[in-house]
Length: 150
Image 1 (cartoon, rainbow, N blue to C red):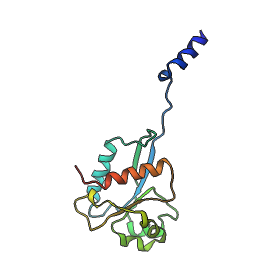
Image 2 (cartoon, helix red, strand yellow):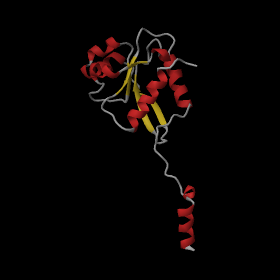
Image 3 (cartoon, helix red, strand yellow):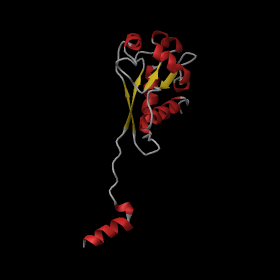
Image 4 (cartoon, rainbow, N blue to C red):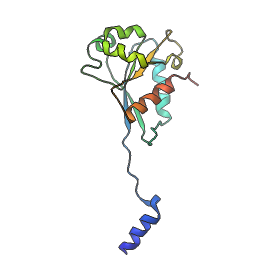
């Protein structure tokens, strides 16, 4: 009987229980009071509703880091005592107050297409401190946000 069960598992591999993959969480730092925050909320929800997944099949979960003092947090805390996977600035000049954020702008993308009412450029980047599935998930989010709403 035991041999029959083992044979069935070897012969019919799809019958094996699949290990459940843990979701990849992408935390975003952004200005919750920016002029285009409401539209950006909608675009992030659209991304989530599409059930995005990494190449390995892991579900991507998006969270916004809740900070009500955008400028102060950006200057004093971001990449010092708090790190997020994705950073969305209101404009490139916001990076002036934080040298590590300034350095990240070299690989930032413009997500202005994601919102209808935005300035000339809305820089966003995936932290260069990351690798693997988290980087991939952040890049998928930013690629989605670079496209105009449907």
